[in-house]
Amino acid sequence: MPKEKTIRVVTRGKTGELRTRDYSHEDDLMKMHTQIGVDDCSTDLSLRGLPVFRGLIGPMPESKDIVRYETPEVFESLTKEWGAVTPKRRSRSKSTRTRTASAK
Image 1 (cartoon, helix red, strand yellow):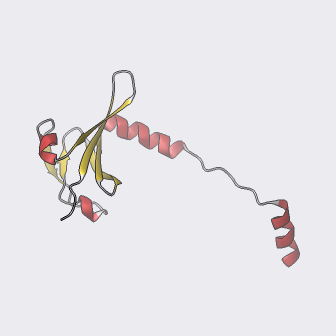
Image 2 (cartoon, helix red, strand yellow; image 1 turned 135 degrees about the horizontal axis):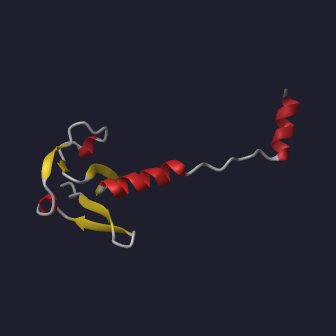
Image 3 (cartoon, helix red, strand yellow; image 1 turned 180 degrees about the vertical axis):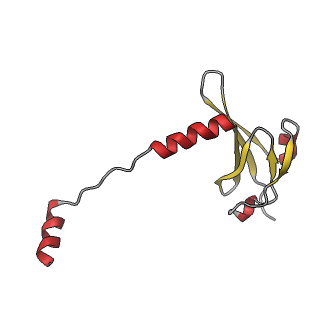
């Protein structure tokens, strides 16, 4: 029997910190939020059929057993942070450059 997915809602607290709240079943979340549809187009097939709630972005996978919903403000700020991270440039070691140049 497959394990139930945990539903995680991420919001921003009054002082700006991220707050998470986990629900064991979507019925618990429906008491707090209004369902406006179901996900029918996710590329992650395990998310299809999960509820879509007014005022929340999601569902989105967080891990194998956790489905995540975020407030629009949290989604926007985390997306900006994710997009602003630039990968470190790696330089080749001097010995590698010498071998590569001599191989030509």
